[in-house]
Length: 149
Image (cartoon, rainbow, N blue to C red; front, side, top):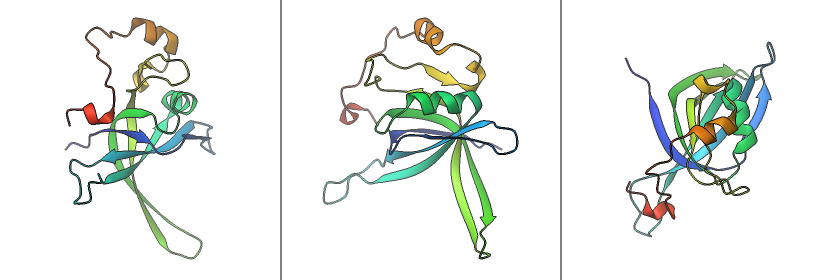
């Protein structure tokens, strides 16, 4: 069986960083807006709003480097969970647990393209990743309208 999701979208607000209550593991959450592949009769492009969860070093990197409006690619898996509130009402949540987050646009503060951050690279220094990342053949996209999908 396979549970893999690849999404490209923009953050709807800044990530929220918290720590798990039992062992203080960093976890960040944010939502991305992903445009659909069509326009409505009124010319609008509908979007889906997908909740994203990141853990450990990736959570800290996302919380420290992402801001509302940033364009990101997220690779991960879909997770569905439930809980009962104090009134006994059952709540369902479907979210994407990210294994990778790639920053696709330039950092608006520094003008530098951010690196590909993966959980396997958690021990690497981010600045080392920027220096060693291969940007040969990379052409920045002027706007979302220029994307081929």
